[in-house]
Image 1 (cartoon, one colour):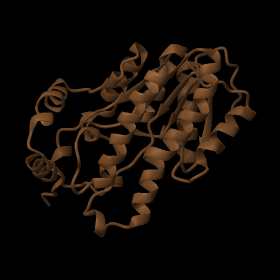
Image 2 (tube, rainbow, N blue to C red; image 1 turned 90 degrees about the horizontal axis):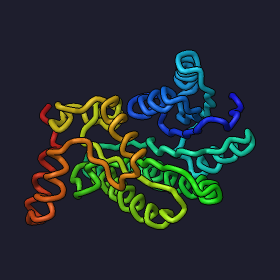
Image 3 (cartoon, rainbow, N blue to C red; image 1 turned 60 degrees about the vertical axis):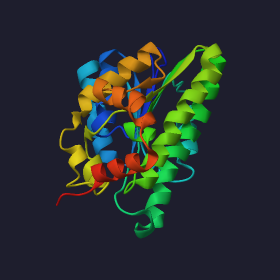
Image 4 (cartoon, helix red, strand yellow; image 1 turned 30 degrees about the horizontal axis):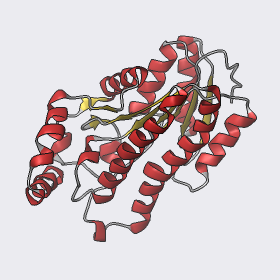
Length: 265
């Protein structure tokens, strides 16, 4: 690990070893900001740390930890406290999904998903928000999904966890607005990352035209800088979610949502 000097804007990013998290790390480092990177894969984190420090001359601390564990948020917080790191930007990016009928899936897998996608995210937000409020400054980016706007047959738990993230983010944003702190929910559509393989989503049509992780990360980071509440990276999706889906008959919406998650192979 590397001790930060706190002279630069420090961002803590979860799920930082690949995909959107890795791209967000590059964007923040390119702006001269130091980083705390959290993910399970220690080797990948080490390689990314070396890459970022060499390319951008910033300081990077890595914490290899499984954030689906119940006490993981507290462990991360205690490590940054011991190193004297003040986190100015919290980016809760880590998360995963899963495909199949709820009653046929392993309950332990969905419990881990709920722990990571909702509980760990909430715990990290609570822990680091204390310092932000005391300093009267801070930014939080919670990576949610367009899935948060509707129920998701065949991904019932995943869609529900993202609905929590989007709702939670907006509520907390209002609570801390007076403290010069912003909270942004990034709600992308499908993204070309390892999410498909991890969530057993191969063959699902919805992922055939996925956006790049880099484009989504850049959109989300810019939205966070502006203090936007909810950021949807595609205008067509934004229009559909805000002006079409709310007025559709519920049963019709559920059928369409399920069809989008059906596997074609």
